[in-house]
Amino acid sequence: MLNTLIKKLTPSYKKTFYTEFQQFGSHLFEMAALQQDFLKAKSKEETSILMDRMTNFEKRSDILNRTLVSELSRSFITPFDRSDIYALGRAIHKITSNIFQSSAKISAYSGLQHDAEVTRLSSIMLDCCNHLKTILYSLNQIVETKTITDSFFRINRLKKEAEYIYNLAVSQLLEKEIPANSMKLGDLLATQEAAINGCKEAVLVVENITIR
Image 1 (cartoon, rainbow, N blue to C red):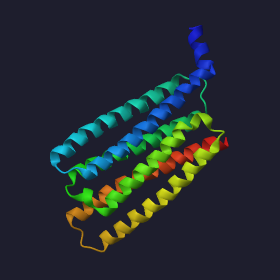
Image 2 (cartoon, helix red, strand yellow):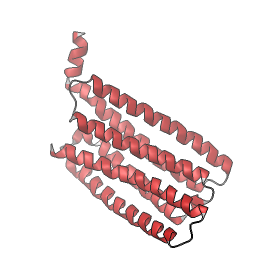
Image 3 (cartoon, rainbow, N blue to C red):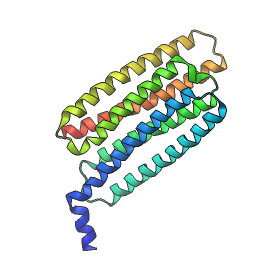
Image 4 (cartoon, rainbow, N blue to C red):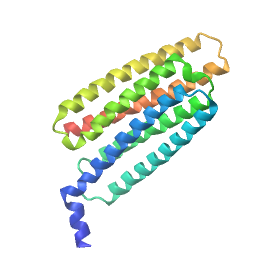
């Protein structure tokens, strides 16, 4: 019992959270990269195989999130504020959830994977997740802020670009009569944009950590 308490109070135990966020970083990047394969799929069979892989990624995301919450509840000392750890985990889980949902919609909505806006938002999502991965891998060196600051800037820029693409696409859809495909496209783009917005939310949490 005493050994367990001492272990929880030592700095080495705090590394658990850094490791878990690094796992999250790799995981969300791999999910975003997998969505690129959905855009290249040439058959329903190929898309079905990709969807099975994406489903496994989503299940793994749920496990990582539960592990983070469990570790948080059992830890006396954390590397930064508990509320920030929880908020960062929640933002990352939002990203992975929306990557999964948008991929499922690409799978379900036949033909939309070739839409220019879908392709561009998927690419922006991948870039954002790559920069967020860099940030999550740098959390244990938070005092060395150049890498983190550069990634902050790039994600903010990409978020603005995604917002512009999404708003323009929606305005164009509203100018048309709303056929079923237009409604499906708007739904898909909104989910992709939500994943990108999740990256911005995660960045804001890390910014809060750096100034405390």
